[in-house]
Length: 456
Ligand code: TYD
Ligand code: MG
Image (cartoon, rainbow, N blue to C red; front, top):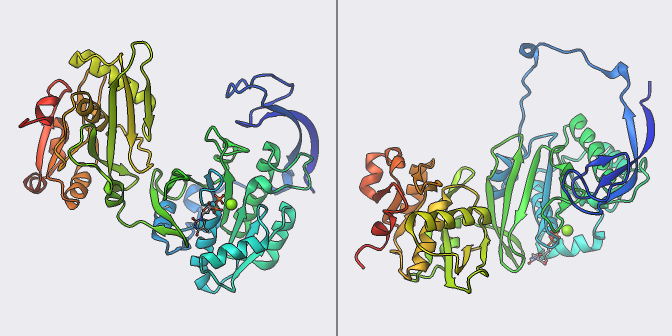
């Protein structure tokens, strides 16, 4: 029995995908104004005959999955060890950041395996892809380009060709014939993805989807896609800078928050194998307001430089800006310092920056921010061979953070000799580590200054 279809009119928010039966000026879900537009929605009722009998958990056979290893190590890392057959991977990022370049390089890396790869592009012509391939020195007989925009045709194409991988660039340019609305609308993006998802799962075909990000940072068409796909990778980094960071935001087949670091060069994205060295490359030494923090991104340690600039402003107009760190966290730490150290900051502008365009989310950054702020405020430098990390609580207490051994090893590898850390984290460091590096335990922000500006 074929599935029955019913069309109905709904109003969908272009920001978050919220659905309403009637028009509303403001979206009740994401609070955006004037984002609901009228669309036709196809509701498919699955036919009963296809429903499957439940089976016992014990009886479910474990399937052996061989991941497609791309041999671009930074990519394999963010994917959790390669591409899982039948998985759907969404690559999001600002226009011009390098998504299409990455896709082409991925396909090239996989093309050595003598199997066909299908690259569907709705954004560029085949000639444009060819020109990019020449720039990247990619010349493979196994990469096939299609400029088809209709999802039903793409599915048919994939069924005939049987590629080992399908890349769709971008999902916003694709449309399904069965839906009336324009490509790029929430309904189209969602329905097209749903159809491609069925293809991926039924054929064990991995599908790479490119998705543009809107100004507010959500994938256009938008976050509605995140829960449908298996893996979500985001491109981070400033277009003005050469570093590109691919971060795993969601992964059903691996850990999240893993990052891959690349450099955009004349002939494509190059892997950065030693990111710590890269992020510290331009660090000014013996300048107030700068300190190094060993961060853990996914499963790997990366040293970053935390910079702060605290300067006098007229009271009432003080600015707080954080780039690469959470501005709320900065506000909170500023308040803690005012309360616990008695310093006045309400009449100071505070700027905080993580050098190199990387974003750090973990609480261990707190102590790095606090130290950089104090260093700039007091105009005193931090010993350049010192690293700091730890979470700071509202009472000014410095709390333990995880993976201290790993952080210590990375700091040691890059030539640092002193590690200022939460007292309660000291026991995580084994005896050998303590011998290799001077570990300074701190308990509260009050006592911090004594350790920071020693010998001055
Ligand atoms: P692209 O992959 O087209 O971005 P997206 O698909 O995310 O929109 O990359 C575009 C930018 O990258 C463009 O500004 C040029 C730059 N670029 C290089 O610097 N080197 C290269 O080898 C390539 C192919 C692009
Ligand atoms: Mg592109």
